Length: 223
View 1 (cartoon, rainbow, N blue to C red):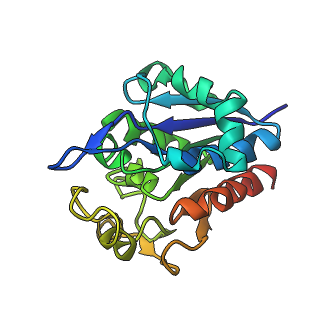
View 2: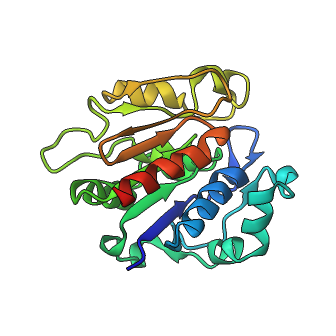
């Protein structure tokens, strides 16, 4: 029976004091989608509001996996995503949160998202996130009251990367915030392919890490 993946995307379209245009970073949703599709998994999309998300980095629309996502049904599914409150997340073998700056807007505090992530993690399903997507892990508390991030080996978009990308637009530095809740942060060279699995939690550093992050999710699901 095919594994089921729920990709949870942001609905935010602008960020920061200058209303910088943003959305879900194309590579970070397309590369995992293609990897999951190639593995034969059933893929659904959800978002906080159920509205159509924005895509960022459309300059890369002709890259092989990005083009396949856009032209062969992935973007169609993402546009017709379900509102998270109307989704039974318990039927999925994994949830995956792609980045882009958008999740920094609507995912740090959303209580339902935190509940879904905690319950998914505690039932031993896989939780994956890449780049700014790990902001979804912030403020997630497990049933024993501890932060999910406590003592977990993790990565995300780093402070060094943010300083040269969107420091003036984001509400906080993600690496710092994840570390403050107990995460054991591991950074690789800026913009290099870097992802980490710690138990059933998988995180990736940046757009170049999206495929590798998904492959680690797949490895856990196939183990």
